[in-house]
Every structure is written in C-alpha cells, then in structure tokens.
Image (cartoon, rainbow, N blue to C red):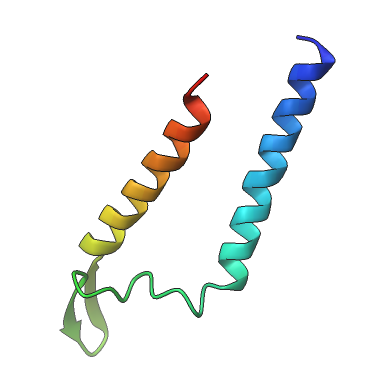
Length: 72
C-alpha cells in the first residue's frame, strides 16, 4: 500500500463522515421516518413502526452512491 492509496482512502472516509454529519444536522428537516409509505400501528405505550418507504429510499440512495464509488 503506497501513500497515494492512503490519501485516497482518507479523502473518501472524510467525505463520508462529512455527509453523515450534514445529515445529522439536517435530520429535523428531512422527513425520513415520516414518509407516506411508512406504517405506524399502535396506541398508548405500545407502538409498532414499519418504515417501508424510508427503507426503499435509503436503499436506492446507498446503491447509487456505492455504484458511483465502485466503478473504476
């Protein structure tokens, strides 16, 4: 492993950490978990939450990001 590969890894790792940080900062404004396809059942102390639409959206976004970085 040479220094160029280490540098590339650090840039990618830093970018991922930056994106995760921005997501946490904007988490109140992003409606994840409250999308129209998410199911919430229950009342009182017992609640069941099934995030179907959120899971599909996150899967699509992660697939696009990983395909972008995996292509060489």
